[in-house]
Length: 415
Image (cartoon, rainbow, N blue to C red):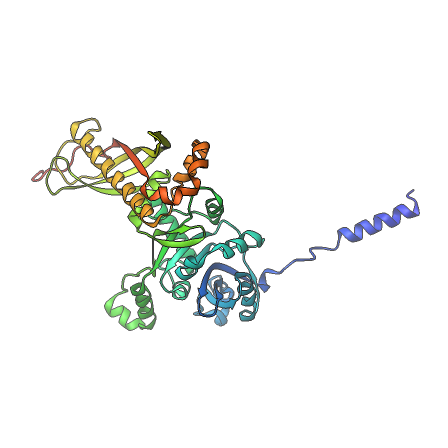
């Protein structure tokens, strides 16, 4: 038999363990945040936050449970607020919604150009501290009207947040024009010696937004007569923003960002049009795939320079010519050399722009810090003066491994 004190202890333990989830929040009482954008008003000194939120009425209609109440409802809506700090602006959003905001499903975090040039450290600090703000969101700096982008709809997608996320992923996989994957990449870049911050760019396309508005105003009869016009995405993903510390200092174009991806070994699939080595006015489509990259600092005669060497695998994807193809003949070797030269130009374009902005987004200073720490101790304080004049040797070797599924092209006049 248990003693009386033991029975009382067990009863208390059971009572404490059966209190349930004291901080439980029912899903039907929450607003799911899909995307978040931050802006800054220099006149007022206030931060501006814009949140794109899933519309539960539209969700219920799609599932056949919403009835007439949710018919025609947009799948998302946008709410905004101001504050003296990013945190205060975020908390002030509660005044514009009937449900508690839930941030764990936020997929995209956008910075306006105005905020980026002022400094993004306060927003990064908020995201690192707040438990709901997950660091797997995809960051980008926006050129253009931030509010219009947050309110825009994307063809084929249920919400703008999903559209942006998938467009970023597609550009990363198919073109190499965008580089940043997740918020987690920004923090080590910001704190690492000799490595400036680099964030992908999204440009708002006014024509795409105008087309969306026009289509909303067209009636079914006009659409039946004229046909559905081709959808135009409201944004162009590609390029990047260069920073010094946490402040933006300029833009990189998409082809310059492609050079960054090559040096950092992040190219998945990138297409190049290369002039044929044998036939005039013939362009060949070459796709680069895997790459191996080595980077090292070299000191000679007291001067430091960087050597970047790439070995790239490629395949021929388009050939409108008439020559028989193999992977080991003179023609394909010449094509590989021309492809290597095209890649080298992309890297040079990125380096030139980086040195022009004096923003070491490739982390070449950090490379010296890791490989030659004693040398870095001597030059660290002068790196801002040394970097714009830094000599960089670029060596690119391309191996054309495949010529597609056929080796014999079509010949004119063949039956």
